[in-house]
Each structure stands twice: as structure tokens, then as C-alpha cells.
Amino acid sequence: MDSEEGTQQPHLVLAHKLFLLRHPDVQDIEKVRLKDEVFAAVKSDDMAPLYETLVADSVLERDQGLLDSMRAKIDEEIKKLDEKIADAQENLGESEVREANLAKSLYFIRIGDKEKALEQLKVTESKTVAVGQKMDLVFYTLQLGFFYMDFDLISKSIDKAKSLFEEGGDWERKNRLKVYEGLYCMSTRNFKKAADLFLDSISTFTTYELFPYDKFIFYTVLTSIISLDRVSLKQKVVDAPEILTVIEKIPYLSEFLNALYDCQYKSFFVAFAGLTEQIKLDRYLQPHFRYFMREVRIVVYSQFLESYKSVTIEAMAKAFGVTVEFIDLWEASLQD
Image 1 (cartoon, one colour):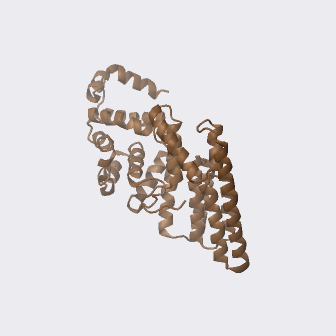
Image 2 (tube, rainbow, N blue to C red):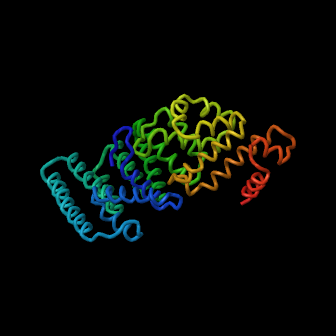
Image 3 (tube, rainbow, N blue to C red):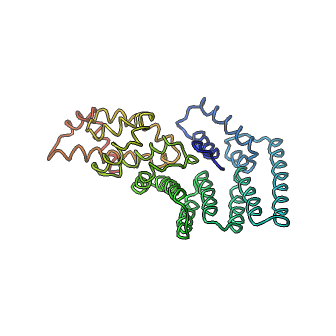
């Protein structure tokens, strides 16, 4: 599950494709392409455990010959890995024993066997002394957690990582953990803490295994808009050089942020409409779509009304470039 700088971890790419494949708003022709790509990835890495799950969920069709072939390859590879572990234990040092156990852990992760991967990671941890190497095992566990959206596993792993850092730990790994924790917070609807952690990581971002930098900026801006006061938003987001270098690459995001800050409400709503599709098709944000939309409405309403002692619905509709009926529907939804 290692990832070169700038490259998203392949299993998390696969997880997003699986999310889209099950999404009701994705067109059938797009799902045909996604299904082919998912099948190719599963076949390429001999992901028999995941394949069986996807067959049971009617995502993929069962090919018994392929399944038998994958199982045979897995048995053969595990035998080789066990032989390397035994050889390291008998003839080599502690470092080689750890590396051999780590290789087996990564293999279980690669084939999509969650339970065996977690078991083997624990074995590998028992062979590990350095805090930094123990932290790397936690990051592997966190990636597993995000693949399966196992928030209990993610939460416990974050707590474990923080406990490890009390023993030491380097600056780079501590900064990486902030992004992992920020993603967990965003995925569990703690947008305020997510925004704080993301903003803290803008200049030190290296967690390309989770998502590309432009996706990180996307999450940072969205969580900040509903979490920060106007002054903080200007200082930390609107004028942030790291955000300014990327934001124009993300459709509608610059208009969304700047139109809100500049009180250009008609432009804001056009951008807002354009962003909704991106939010709905994001596996971390989609479960909170209605909540996020409501929070954005509260922000824009509050900002608009702050300037007035009283204002009519007609005036609001005109400022926002929408109908009175639309405003009424919005107000009703805020009560949901």
C-alpha cells in the first residue's frame, strides 16, 4: 500500500470506483466502464476475498474458474511469504524478521483480506521497536479503515498514533496524521475540527496516498466555509497562497468561496449549484450532503441578514437571484 509522492493509494482509488458504481446518480454507461475497471483491478491483484464480497452484493458476476485461480495464487504466495519469515527467524536478524512479516501484512492488504491483514499487522508490530516504523503500521491500518469506511477502526488507530507520539515520533509523520484525522472528522460530520486540521496541514501536505492536493484543497475550503468566521475565512482561506495556487483548477470552487465572501449572492448560487454534484459524488461527503447544504444556507442567510434590521423575502430573492418560492423551500428545509 505504499504510495509514491503525488500518487493516490490504488486501493482508495478502487474504493471510490466502487462507491460510484453503487451510486444511483451515476449514468449506466459510466457504470459499465467503472465495472470493467473494478474487475480489472480485482483480477490484477488476485483480490479473491473482495471479489467474493462483490459477487455476493451483485456488483460483479461470479466466475468460479477465476476465483479458483486467484485462490491458488494466494495459497502459493502465502507459502512463499511464510518460508521467508521462517528463514529470517532461523538465519537472519530482527530487522529481517520484521520486514518478512511486514511483506505478509502488505500482501493481505493487497488482496483485500481485511481481517488477516489486521492480524498480521499486529504480528509485525510485535516485531517492531522504532516508533516511526510503528507509526507506519498505523497508517496502513488507517488506509484499511478508510477503504472499508470502518470508523471504529479509524478512531482507535488515531488514538493509538497519538499515544505513540508521546513516546517520540518525527514532525513529518505528525503532520501526516493531521490529514488522516481531518478526513476522519469530515467523514463523521465534525467539520469544524476537520477544517482546523486541514488548515494546519496546508503548507506541509504530503499525504498523497489519501488524495491529490487539489482534492485536499477542495475539502479544506468546503469545511472552512461552514466553520470559520468571516475574518478567519479571509485570512486563512481567501488570501492563503497555497489555496490560491490550486483553487482555480477545481470547478466552481473559487467562485463559490469568493462570491460568498464578496457578498455576490447571485454568482454564489450559480457556483453552489455547480458544486453540489461534486459533493454528492464524493464518498466521504455524500452521507452528509443534506447537512452540509443546510449549513451553507445558514452561513449565507446569516451573512446577508447581518446587514439589515429587517428584510423582506422578496428582497432576499432578488439579491440571491432566485424566486420567492425557492427561498420559502429553503426556509422549510432548514427546519428539517
